[in-house]
Amino acid sequence: MAGFTVAQVVEVLATLANLAFLVFLIREQVICWSFGIVGSLLSVYLFLDARLYSETVLYFFYAVMGVWGWLRWHRQAAQDDNPVITWPLARHLRVVPVTALLALGLGFTMAYLTDAERPLFDAFTTVFSFLATYMEIQKVLEAWLFWLVLNLASIWLYHDRNLDIYALLIAVYSVLSVVGFLRWRRSYTRQQFNASAP
Image 1 (tube, helix red, strand yellow):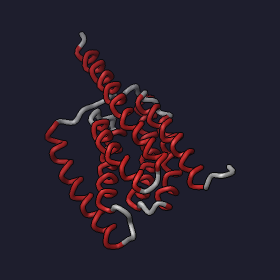
Image 2 (cartoon, one colour):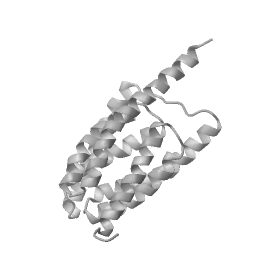
Image 3 (cartoon, rainbow, N blue to C red):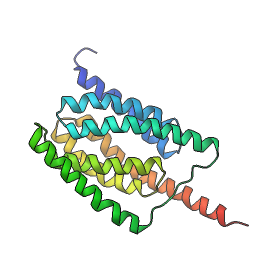
């Protein structure tokens, strides 16, 4: 397209694919993973170009996890057994400190071994996104709360690196994280009611 750089075109296409992913994820539809894979692979190019190496690793991870998510959700849907679940507080209290330590390790590694921008901040959003993605695939309700915090933090990071379309997308994600949480909580409540019904 005349007047646009390759990176800008890729950013728009990745944004559309990632937005479609989130809309279908909220609706608990398996097709979400197809859009997620495409959007993630396009994003890898963008983050390499912006020298956000932890984000590059993250989006490559998203693409791989998208394949697993598609396979798992497809299999579970075929068995009519893909419920929304919750994690007990004790599990969160074990997982969060371990994830924070891993983030510190990645951040210091990126700071000392690469020319990465914002290495600690980038590492924290990256490693906690690994956790939130795993939770999402398992349909853990609290994943949406993790995403809300991560999305709000990522708005600044992307704006700082002149990825303003992505910053806007992540702002939309922040709102949709609330929508996703409320919708999945309704599904979870309905499942609990149906399970207790005689």
